[in-house]
Structure formats: structure tokens, C-alpha cells
Length: 476
Image: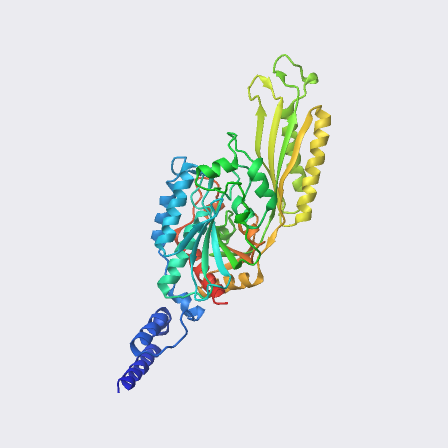
């Protein structure tokens, strides 16, 4: 008799749910299903197997809470607000890491760290032996920058897990958040340091043991140890390496760092490729001398050689006749740096990138040829021309693109396919697993400056797309 009553209750609730107005039914569908199951004792679906459209209607982001966390994290800074300066292994970086680890633990994630401080927070799925689906970004910040670059992809990922937990979703594949060490090259001149090591860069691991120092002549290993990392007695960093296929997929949520989404009034960018970056270090040595006593015909000015090369960088980039080719002289230093002294040394650091690797490499070759020509013409010595890194571009995986685009569509968010011309940790995660990125708009495209900003609404949209895409991939 009791079994019959429970069955009749189940039928009654099902009929009521069908009679609800369609908009209300869509919003409350998964809650109604769960209530019917609990009350009647009859399962309607397998745990965690809500249809994605039903799941999409149930995703609720705590946007004020996410903004509060971003504001709190920005306080861990060596620059006054609104600027953020958070450099690898400094005291403020260590405190910021602790803050994120606490949030991961409060979310119920299992937290671990590797030898260089990549931080992992895992939500175990029902089939934990399957390769997990990962997401994440970085929290280090270049001097006097903003508080959203990278941070949205870390704190937003934690919120995405909370969103899925609140919805009642149960993952099949585990979901894991990664906070990558030192995406910015600020301290040791190496971008995406943590993700490069995860991708198995043996050359970098060896260099970090012996030859990499910061501007204060502190070695990478000593800096890492001061922050509680690199504890292996032989300074072996190979334990950081991950095997290809360690993850089923990886998605990074990030502000666009450009104006396209905002200008076109779009909610989401689905990234299809990441441009190929390269970094160069160049040094000239000249004669120096007194600014008044050495006449112009007798000078060997290392500063003018650097200035001429900076203009040559612009020239060679424009010669490519592609809008996707860019070049920047981000650092130009002169020695001894006195107004009444002819520069005897100059140091340049050059960034050039393109979605076409061959075209970018052509620009690098031309820059090197110009450096040699300038040195001869100005009778200075080209004492260094070093290619610090020359990375290939990365393509987003077709399945990951599909899931991200489906998620945006099911959430009724406008989106477009985009290329990332900034590099990200995703560039190196693509060497480990299928990869994709989600862009959200940022004010006027500003980034790497205090005015950097993304609205709570735009962040919430990104978190929803990330949540739904992670859920889809987890069940795949």
C-alpha cells in the first residue's frame, strides 16, 4: 500500500510540473525533479546526469562574493591600491597563495602543491581513475597592474565548482583547479614558468637549478626555498612534469585584455588559437665618454644603437603586412644612466608574436640582421643577441571549443570565435591535454594597468560558461 501511495505521489508531482508555465518550469525543473525523487523514492535520472539545458537553468553565481574575493586578494600587493604588484615568491605572493588555498579547502577541494608552487585543488568525481578535467590560471601580477588578469580564472574557477555543487551536479571525471606559478616573467624573465615545467621542459628545469637569477642576484632555487618550495636536496624539479594525457581537457577563463568583446557588445569569446610568442635580449657596448667633451663624429653611442634597433623592430613588424604580427621593445636600459654621460652600454628586451610561427620567425631573423648592421655602422659591439624563448602557437581542441560554444548558447549568451594574441598558461597546457579558453569583456580592453576592470555581470557570465563546459566534459 505504501509503495502505491509513493507512486501516486510521484505521478501527481510530475503532472504538476508539466502544468507549470514554461519559463517557471525551466527555472525550477531540476529542483522539481530532485523533490520528486526524494519524495517518491523513484529515480528519474542517474546521479549527476541532468540534461545540460536543465543544468544551465540551475546555475547561480555569487557575483558579489566573487567580487569581494577579488578585492580581498588585491590587498596582497607591494603597490598601493588601485595598483597591484605581486611578484613570484615575495611575502605578498606567499600570503596570496595561502588565501587561495584556504578558499579551495572551504570549497571542499583536496589541495596539494608541487615543487615550484603550482597549486592544485581537486573535486573527486564518481570515476576518479579517469583523467580529470582541469581549469585555472595565475595570480602573480606585474608591477603596478590590475586585479583581474589571471585572478578571474582562479577565483572564478573556485566559484564555478561552488556553482556546480549548489546545482546538485555530480561529476563523473574529477574536476581540478590549477593555480600556475609565475605566468608573468617579472622576477626571473621567464613567462609561464609553472606551466612550462608541467609540460615537461627539461631545459628549463636544468637552467632553474643553476643559471637563473633575479635582478638582486637571488637564484630561483633560493627564492623558491624562501617561500617553502624546492625542498628536494638535489634541487630536482622533474617531479613537477606531467605526462601527456594527464588531463582529459583544460579550460582557462580569462579577461580578454583587448577591446573586441566590449566594442561588439558580446558576452563571451571562445578562443580557437593562441599566438606564438618570442622574447629576445639584446645588448650593445660602446665607448661612452663625457657628453660635452666627445664630439659627435667620434662617438660610439650604445644608446643610439638601441634606439635605432627599437625603430627597426617596428619596421620589420610592419613589413609583414599582417595585423596579427606585433613587436614591442618593453625594456630599454642605458648605462651609466647619467644625463651628461654618453651611454657605454644598452640593454633591450623585445617581445614579438604572431599566430603564424614562420612569419614571426622571419621578423626575428630581420631584427637580428638589423642588430648586426647597426653595430657595424655605429662602431659598437653587439655583445648579446639571445632568443630567450621562441614558442609555437597552440590550437584549441575541437571538442573543447564545441563544449564551450554549446555552453554559451544554452545560457543564451552571445559569443564569437576569437584568437588570443596574448599568451597564457593554456599555451603550454596544450602540450599536456586538449585545451580551450573562455574570454570575457574588460573595460576598454585595459590590462596590465590599474584601470583593468571586468564587471560582476561579465565575470558571472564567464563563470557560468566555465561551469557548464566543465560539467559537459566531466560527463564525456
